[in-house]
Image 1: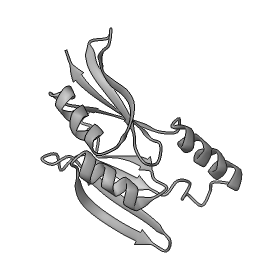
Image 2 (image 1 turned 180 degrees about the vertical axis):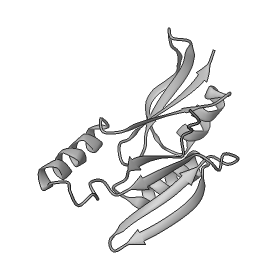
Image 3 (image 1 turned 90 degrees about the vertical axis):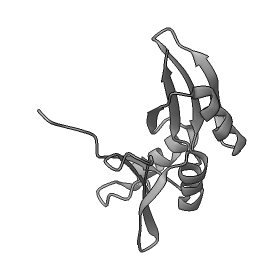
Length: 136
């Protein structure tokens, strides 16, 4: 089977704040920016990897989601328990310092893990957990 990851979706509750985090703090390219009424979908991705993108989307935009489900999503986002993405780098300390300097919320400073990576973690402006790994 020949499969690869094309897009992953992360919710945002403020498109401008999310755009600033992924573009300015993480250095991702903006690949698409689509408004539909009051909603906005922003596609970003790492430079040099045009085949992999993150779509930042309004939470609960699916018309099949109930108001109760939308409320639960919003509550989970606020607690940082709704969505996670794991990125990788060859320079965890340098990446951590650069992202931290932007004022991003630090969840975990770089540390060696028993499963063979050194990693750190941030929360994006919507509360999504952004973990960054470096293989040891």
